[in-house]
Image (tube, rainbow, N blue to C red; front, side, top):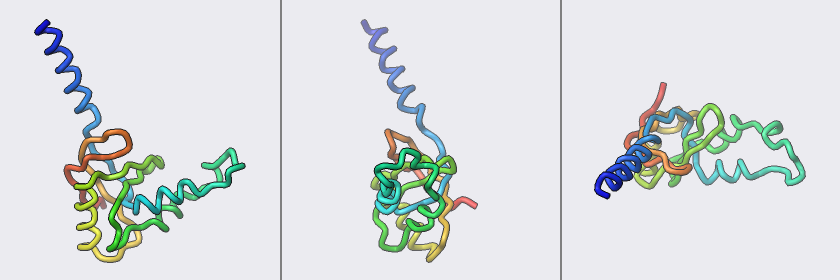
Amino acid sequence: MLFTTRLITLLCLSFAFAYAGNWPGTLVDSKCFAIAELNVNPTDTLTYVDRDQNQEIRLCSPGAKTKSFAVVQHDGESFKLDSAGNAKASEIVRNAGKKSSWAVLVTGDVSGNTIKVDSISMNR
C-alpha cells in the first residue's frame, strides 16, 4: 500500500511539472483580445481564414490602465496570465512607456489556458 501511494504521488508531481516552461509571444489586453476573437460572423464556417490576428494584436495592445493580460504566441494560441503575472506585466507596461508591440518571454507553469507566472521580461 505504501509503494502504491508513493507511486501515485510521484506520478502526480511529474504531471504537475510537465507544463512548466517558457512562452514567448506578444503581450495583449486579455479582455480586448477575447472580444476580438469572438467577433465573427455567426454564419461564417471558415472563421480563421477571414481573420487578421496581427490586427487584433495591434488593436489590443496594452496600455497603462490595462489590468488583465494575455500572451499570444506566434502560432495564434493565447494564454491568460494569473493575478501575479498581471501585476508584473502591468509594471512592465508602465515602466516601458507607449509601444506598438510588446514581445515578451513568460516563464511559469500553465494550467488550462492560464500561466502561473514566475517571471516576465521583454523579448528582443
